[in-house]
Structures are given as structure tokens and as C-alpha cells.
Length: 191
Image (cartoon, rainbow, N blue to C red; front, side, top):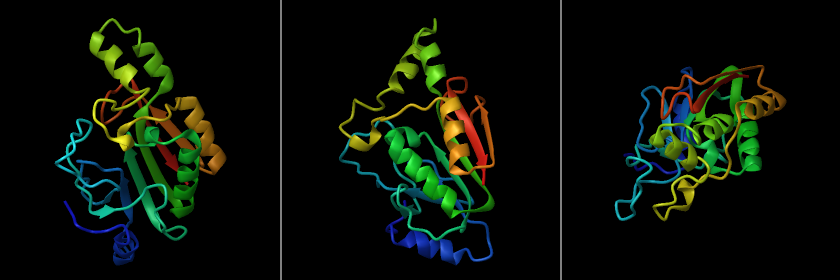
């Protein structure tokens, strides 16, 4: 785990002059090679957090206010993070990320799909019912405010919102790389 502070994000981006700037936002315990891995919450071993496995951030920064200039980022990736914000906070955040993306830049999001969660609530397999139900409120076992969920997006709704923000291409698949394929969706959008 890094000891960098939030003020280091713009410095790290500036150090990549001439190289692609790829940000992995809300990284938690997952470190993606070739990305600046960003999280707001360092691991605190005194607090029980059953939702994530530590924190492997390169930089600590608030993904709702990254403070970067226009058109400096080539790619954003974030996995199961946008559901931790209210709908309007998320729209503001996505709008700001769009501003920071270079033309042709890419946004990749994985998150649960509201409609699929509803279907899974009635699934014959008990574990699928459980993981569908959890999406509506997030981690309620540990006393960590940032681990709760505040909004569950449907594929149709997020696609419409991303297009209204200005993304030219928005593709959604239910073949995800993390968590639960079939329940979750992978969104790839291009500026």
C-alpha cells in the first residue's frame, strides 16, 4: 500500500507525460497493472471490513472530485463503486470524468444491474437470492458508511444517462470480469 496523499494524483498524472493516463478508481484491495490505482479509504486493520481485501491504492483521492484538468485521462475503470453514491452524485461524477477524458477516451464500469437483481431475488439458488438482495443496501454488517449502497442502476438507465452526458458509444454486456456475471453489467463508453 502506498503512502501517497490525494494531492499526489495530479503529480502522478503529470509524471506520465507522453504516456497513457489510466485510472482505476475505488480500487480497494485490487491493484491493476498499468493504472494509477486510486481509493479514498486506506485500509484500517482496527475496523472490520468484510467487503474488501485491504487497500492497494497508489494514490488516495476522492473519485467525486479528482481535480484534474480537461482531457488528460485516457481511461477510467471502476468496479462496484458507483452504487455507493446517490444517483445525482453519480451523474455529477460521471460528467466530471467525461470532462477529464481525452477525445476517444474510454470509461469501463462494472456494477449490478437493477433488473437482473430483481430477477435474481426469485432465483431457485439461495446464494443468488442473497447476492441480489445485498445489492440494494450494500455492506450492512460492518459499521462502515462508505460500504453501503445508495443507488442501483438499470442498464437502460445508465446507458441513457451516459449518452446525455456526451459519451458517443455506450456498450453494455452482462458478461462481466468481476463479481457475478449475469447479475452484473459491464459498461464500456467512449468519449
